[in-house]
Length: 131
Image (tube, rainbow, N blue to C red; front, side):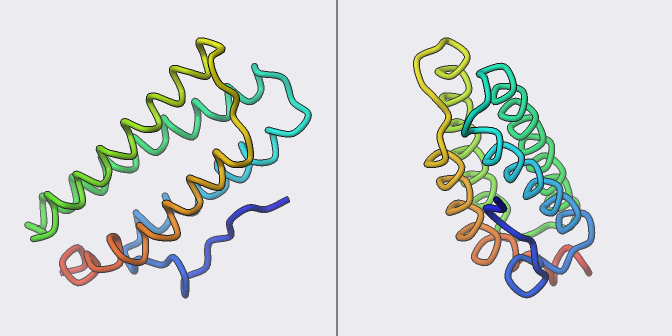
């Protein structure tokens, strides 16, 4: 079952590279969401690790683009990225140490973060990144 679907109207930041990466991120989140019920820890762990690794690379790409273009909101944007990466790292570590489970509540948390972050934090960088 699809948790999140990328549409230009709802999630389009108007910048080609981040938009394409967001689509990939959504596919990975949906794969993790679908893997949670009925799969073993190995499958879930692989989906989790793939998603988190991609998120880290995506954030690096966005941050590099913002720095190159001198985006005024860079510091605040980077701080949001760092907070999510820290949360993800804690979840990932706890999962791999068998101290927690990944559930659909976990994937819903990521969806909620994206629902908030992309429209409020990513979309405002469009004029600068496309200049």
